[in-house]
Length: 100
Ligand code: FES
Image 1 (tube, rainbow, N blue to C red):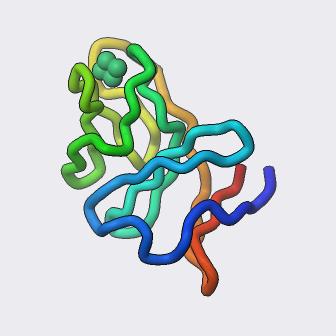
Image 2: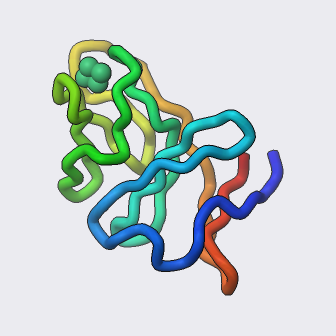
């Protein structure tokens, strides 16, 4: 794992998510009480979760409305023990970094 800059500061609106590409990975960053990072693709049919509706810790995949906890990556519908990978995120002076 290595810390890499993924986004400029203030590039993700509060209460929203945005998708970024880093080293062939698609990562969704959500700006809630702080930043959270997880794999950007829904396990159902690879829907992009970043534009999904965010309510507190839960994002809804916009394609068929499965739900994930953005802090743990855990899928909350239908399947047990399924998680999207999460990543550590830090806001630094010059941008937002993830440990990938
Ligand atoms: S692709 Fe996300 S719920 Fe179907």
